[in-house]
Length: 228
Image (cartoon, rainbow, N blue to C red; front, side, top):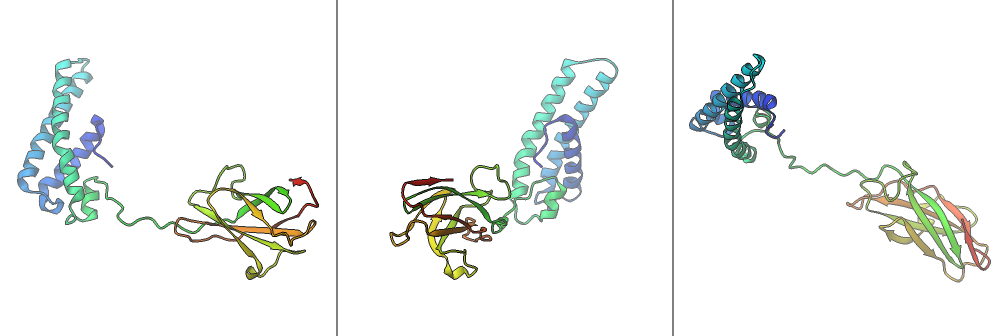
């Protein structure tokens, strides 16, 4: 967490920090002199805060006590913020020690991005001549527009034949796409009425692929256009 600015939270955070810095400043990459300075500013803030709270509890709302508290709080924050950053950046201070002070420990190891878990769904949009337009969608979230989270694009494959092949090597690679709609153009040798099939898989920014989509087929139209 960052240094809180709300009075009640700052009281707890600063009290913990002050206790630890005072008892073992070297553990946190600082010195006894700096810990003493912090202790002085911390005590001034706690005193001013307690005086303001006590006055309000007795029914008195004193602007002067509030101003004293605000000034003491700002003085403490002005000292604590650069100290926080210094300790956070100090590689000699252990992560455990930083956490004890309520300091955020940066994640220096990037979180691995897993391969896509789900296969895309495939929709046939239209077939005009020997060109078939398909759309890929997030099969896990069918109402979602666009690619799933963590996906950079998809690899698209086609096959011409009565039934989709089970052998991955039989599929023809049609290319990669970073958008969800793409055209697949079949050669003139693929005659009208021929059955054509499509499959695809998502890949992430590290070019790791997910599972292949269930094949979806259509027929090359015998002239004109066919729209699904």
